[in-house]
Length: 215
Ligand code: HEM
Image (cartoon, rainbow, N blue to C red):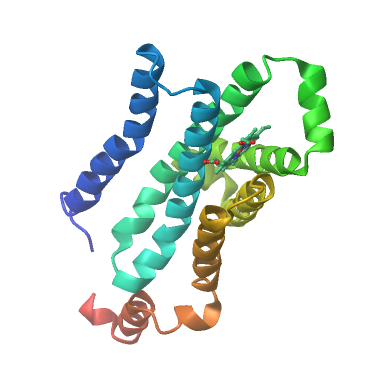
C-alpha cells in the first residue's frame, strides 16, 4: 500500500514536465512581444504550435508503454498534464489559423475545410480532442465510470488524424511527418495484447494476485 509522501517522485516529475511544456509557449510569446519571429511570423506560429501539439500527443500516448517497460506507475500519472498541454497547443494552433492566417474570413475558412483535406482532417482531430480535454478531471472519470476509458481511447484516433494532417500538408520532404508516423505506429504496436503479457507491470500484478500476503 502506498503511504502519504510516497508519491514525491511523481510530483517532481509533474512539476518538471509542467515547466518544460510551458517553455515553448513562453518562447513564442517572447518572439511575438519582441517582433522576432522571422520573415513570416504567422507561419512560424502556425508551425511551432502544430509541432508542439503533435509531439505532446505522442508523449501522452507514450506514458502507458513507459509504465509497461519500467513497471513504474508514475508515468501514467503524467498523461493528463501532457494531454492538456497537447490540447492547449492545438487550441493556439487553431486560433492562429482562424485569427491570423485567415483573419476570421469565414468564407475562406469554410472553403479551406471543404477543399483542403488536410484542414478537414486537422479540424476533425481538434473536435475529437475537445471532449477528451473537458472530461479529463477525476470528477468526470468517476461520473463516466467504465465509459471514461472507452471515450479516452479516442486519443489514438486523434493522433492518427493529426499525423495524416501533417503528412497531407507536406508537399516535398516528408521525412519529419514520416518520423511522427513511425513513432505512432510503434506506440500502437506496444498496445497489442500479446506484448502486454510479458511486461514487468503485468508480472508484478500476477505475482501479487498469486501471493496476496506479500502486498
Ligand atoms: C490536434 C490537432 C492538430 C494538430 C496536432 C496539428 C498539427 C500540425 C502540424 C504538426 C503541422 C506542421 C507544422 C510544421 O510544418 O512544422 C500543422 C500545420 C498546419 N495546420 Fe495543423 N494540427 C491540428 C489541427 C489543425 C486545425 C484544426 C487546423 C485548421 C482548421 C490546422 C491548420 C494547419 C495549417 C494551415 C498548417 C500549415 C500548413 C502549411 O504550412 O501550409 N491544424 N499542423
